[in-house]
Length: 302
Image (tube, rainbow, N blue to C red; front, side, top):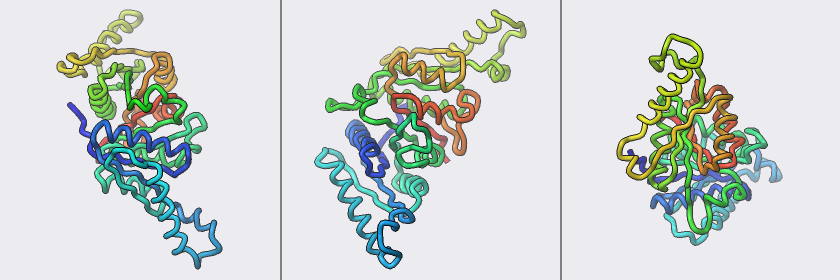
């Protein structure tokens, strides 16, 4: 099932690093012939300190909005894309989520510094919050030095896409988006499951015997379940690879992505917390923070 992307919402704080997300927004909007919204939120409790006092608050608002609109127009320049700037005032996380829903965004984009941790996300803790509050998938990108083979002057290419699969409804939705993008870009599709034996008793009809026979039987059933996720027609344009890993979920996903030079990781995210089982605790956060490639977090719609 193809996932339509008609409206793309791109967040930037107008820093050099964050502005890289705008390049992704332009490239994806061109790829899907989508409408692009480039959004900046002015946090006035902070920005008012640059003035002489509350008496200048209204003037500061107007000046900040005018400056932001100018900079957004400079960022997009003469690129051939249908787009609109959005500048608002308030709390960044709340405003971005509200505007994305208001504009009916099918995809949102934000940037992160990665290894410096969630507190150093380019929008503060905003990207972490957006992962759980947006009604649409969020593409989290890194700096340009990480994505030279994906985003270039020749256009955007996802040659290899990894989808984390734990058979929950959250990862099923992530799989739909990963499959759709793989079809759009004619990508290799890697379906990866991290082994966690305690959660399988209710999921599979496995042997009551213990030991090596149980392990082999379990692996066979999991691989079969992964393969059955792929629609028959998808085999006309790709040969999905099913992979089983064993170890801490985030470490195994990151290691596999690095070794196999993935261009995109797609993960499911619950509304107010990360997916349990495969994505225990802060697994998705850790993957986003440490993987060198972009990550697409997919949250269940409201």
